[in-house]
Image 1: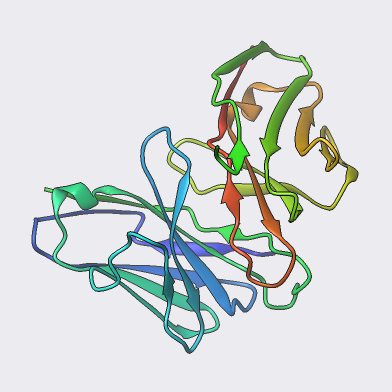
Image 2: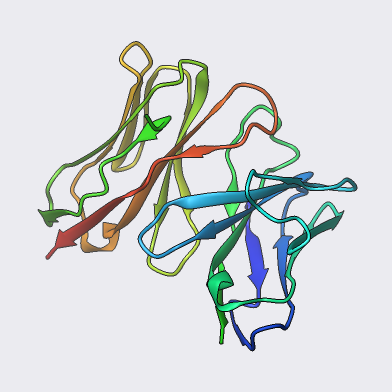
Length: 118
Length: 112
């Protein structure tokens, strides 16, 4: 149980284009999903917290107009990197909390999306 | 001072060794403690979670939390080459939807 998928697993795009990454909880409902960014050999950096049916909460320093987050259902959240530039190249990982297990704060992670902007 | 400190290693051990991984933290409000394992180019996988102080065992893995010392540990017994990965500690305060505060991760290599 507690499986989270991400699509695509890898994407290469030209500078200036927009890229959408999907995060799905496959066998549970997730009222809250999180988007992280990870640089090589570095820890996870929380970008934003996504709550179903409401606006995402962004961490300090993360541009909400550049990283658009939509959490339209209990099983799907999307991250759109708008007008991508080479410095946006990174490993993007989503995670989700199991709505039914409200006592714990553990998060279940997707496999990640490797974005390369040329 | 970072809220969570974790030695990034790398740590290299022979197969069969007992591995000890540790994190220290400064925020006494943390109540939930987790260990994640991350293989290269993959998302983190939840290994263990504990609430407040105490020990928890699951197969070859044992998690310990010492809140008085603000110190958590993960022990791996009879380590295997397949345990080679980065191990990240994470913790949060009580309450729903508290964000996790992460350690840097410790890179572990188990040599056959």
